[in-house]
Length: 346
Ligand SMILES: NC(=O)c1ccc[n+]([C@@H]2O[C@H](COP(=O)([O-])OP(=O)(O)OC[C@H]3O[C@@H](n4cnc5c(N)ncnc54)[C@H](OP(=O)(O)O)[C@@H]3O)[C@@H](O)[C@H]2O)c1
Figure (cartoon, rainbow, N blue to C red):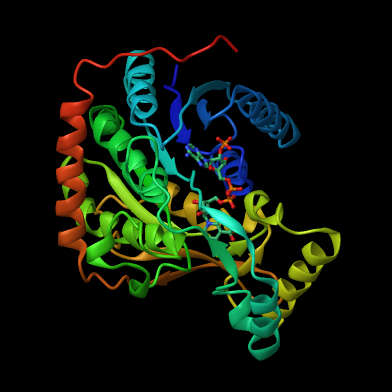
């Protein structure tokens, strides 16, 4: 009997997370055995997403056995991160795919006047690199770290570090989800935990790019592939909650206009956004080529999807990695002998 491919998708119930699962199924042989490990901070959302994946398996006629498991993890809580590791390590000998998809910002609504000005002066820029989303400054987690830094970068990094033996055993592939908004300007070496910036979300994605550049060679020595990808721009539940009926459809219309004006990144649809993550994961790349590139989900004017790669400006990767390594050591000491069980039967 073939062994089951074990796939972890963090934040599985997000638009992108769910579509990564769908696309993964659609792009693997119909008889492949798969085990999806979904993650969420709440059991309810775990149950919902498992039902959706199950439905997709039936709809597309996947005939291989598909198993489901879950981890309740909050990346802003290091005890929870460590517990996720214990659970996975207890249950699995190998992990084949690990998608770092969960992410959060510390949004505080929309600067509507700024938004209108931006849309009028440069509509394409307004829906590609918006600056009117208000982000709170200086928000720390209960662990005392920059909240967005911990949620989007350090928490997932720490979990992966712990899981390296399982990823090595599975010749695994790690896929980090970055963003089209991860320009070097969003990160200052004086503020790696993103506590002084009003663009902590974008800064966290810059950190993801740099952390990937700093670590993929090390992973390669273990037989683990690592990629960083960006899904373009698509509808997101977490941000659209700030919009009402009119502004939601207004934004959607602008997305389509942006695409017509020539933006390759306005995928709009979560399934198209999941193109690059699944492409990178399933790419046959025995020589570990092109791991230094960022793979993007792109769309033509007419809506046809394709993969577009970008170079990553590597400045400050070593400094960032040094900082994160030191944090890792610090938390190894803090979490020594810490074992908890937050798992509740499904
Ligand atoms: N939407 C876009 O246009 C866009 C563009 C570029 C990049 N991205 C990236 O694509 C990915 C998915 O985006 P999305 O818009 O589909 O997601 P989303 O709707 O923002 O959902 C985020 C997911 O992350 C999980 N999550 C949030 N904070 C967490 C925490 N502290 N610990 C553990 N899990 C946490 C949530 O799970 P629970 O609430 O169930 O715990 C949720 O499933 C993210 O990495 C995002 O940065 C999105």
